[in-house]
Amino acid sequence: MARRKLHHYQFSEQAENVVQAGKPLYSEIKGNWNKLYFNNESPIVAELACGKGEYTVGLGKKFPEKNFIGVDIKGDRIARGSALATEQNLTNVAFLRAGIQYSEEFFGNGELSEIWLIHPDPQVRDRNEKYRLTNPTFLARYAAFLKEGGMFFLKTDSDFLYDYTLQTLGEAPNFRIIEHTYDLYQSHLLDEHHGVRTHYEGIFTAKGYTIKYIKAQLV
Image (tube, rainbow, N blue to C red; front, side, top):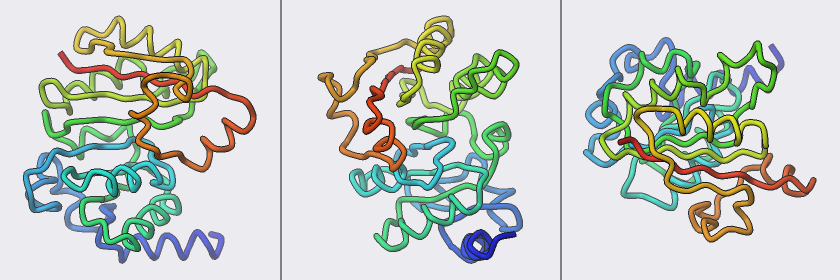
């Protein structure tokens, strides 16, 4: 293991805002995030495949009245988000190190108010459809996690994932697409971007990619 990754892994082991294997909350947290971690009854927002946690931290800073959980399997990425939240004294931000495919082990039915996907891997090959985070199986899982009227958001630079998600959400029995745009930065929906832009989004836009955005609601 590279020295930098080892440092990040050790950081996550000690960080109070990281829930991961080997820590007591890891096996107890499902359905209990408000009670066991945040110690309040504020709405919970999850960013799945959060990477370095830039969006989780950005939203946490902007909306102190909500709780935020960034989820990713990569320990070095989680450590960066954890450190950033700690530096900014954001007690309403937590990170979960786990694969999205195991999310049912960590979130109870109706526990979340919002779910965000920010530039997930589009998995464009047909054989990889099972890994797309907006396939029907994952959407059904998100529907279980969300409260009645809960919101689902996607931001992506991928034309493929944008079109695919419009199709799967349109066919999903539990979701209604509220609004969507092929070019967020030129849309009236730009304010819903909340001024938070990840490092990779900056790279995508600099290369001329438009940022696609979808907002859907659990019905």
